[in-house]
Length: 90
Image (cartoon, rainbow, N blue to C red):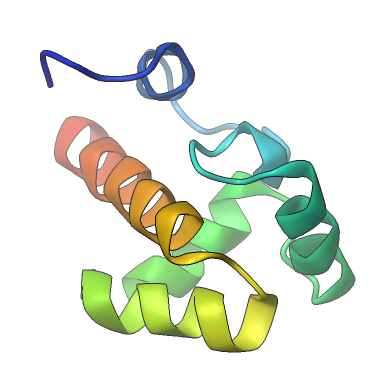
C-alpha cells in the first residue's frame, strides 16, 4: 500500500460505521447515485455485497459494471478498497 490514494488511506483509517457509499475509494458521484438508487446507500451495505460474493474481486467488479454502471477503473478501485478494508478490520 505504498502508493495508495488519499481517499483510500482515509477509508482504511477507521471502521466503516455509517459512512455513505460515496466514501468508498473508486466510487464517483454518478456511481454513488446509481448505487443509492439500487439500495446501496451505505458503505457497509456495499461491503455486504462484496462479502456475499465471497470477496471474489472479479465477480464483484463484473456486478458493479453490469448492474450499477461502474467503469472498469471504478470497479477495480472499489473492489481493492473493500479488499484492503477487510484485510485491516476482519
